[in-house]
Length: 291
Image 1: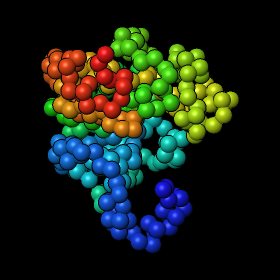
Image 2: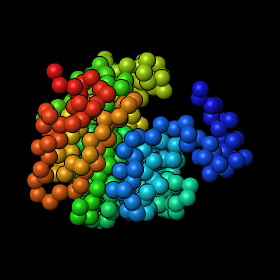
Image 3: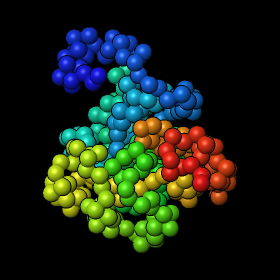
């Protein structure tokens, strides 16, 4: 049973976050490899694109914020439909027992305010699908990483989302977007989205008419999923962006979790790209299983 938000808010105020965390912990479903991810990220200085993310918080299945030494954040605007209004500066609260990080306002695919090799890890949860040019974004995320820096990427698997009727986006298409310098005003996929987006699985989008208007204003809302992923294409995209893949974990209800390392030169990802890759067997999503 889901406790109504006003009751949860009042309980948190009365009891405090530590007590609430203790009460909730026995009922949370934690990713079985959460500790392994924490070991990779322990003490690191990170940048999150599009956070904060409930998945990575204390109540989420992959509570990695606790492991980090510090975390800054990048948003495309000072006001988004996901976060409300935010202010630049030391205002990014990502964990109740960690110092606030720096809030940066810039595009995910153009991190101009951030110098090269500034961070030890980059985190992006359910963000890259909203970016029109994912390879350009991954190139920027790679640029701001130190040598051997880590990328934690979480993407929605189409099988578990409102994208389930849409065709999986090919790597060739995303390479073409990069070569043609596609920008965030791109609406190439709009006809497909309007036809195949399952509004029954996306109640927050409102009516068909409301959804259409929001899509037309995507340069402001950034709600469109430009590209649709299964685990194979997510892995291939990360490989194309010159990251060495360390872990791949498809996870219910709709997550593709990839941990990778910045690679100098051509990465060796043949095992992860193979039809024999372990995730094909372990994945809970039918589109990942070999036929």
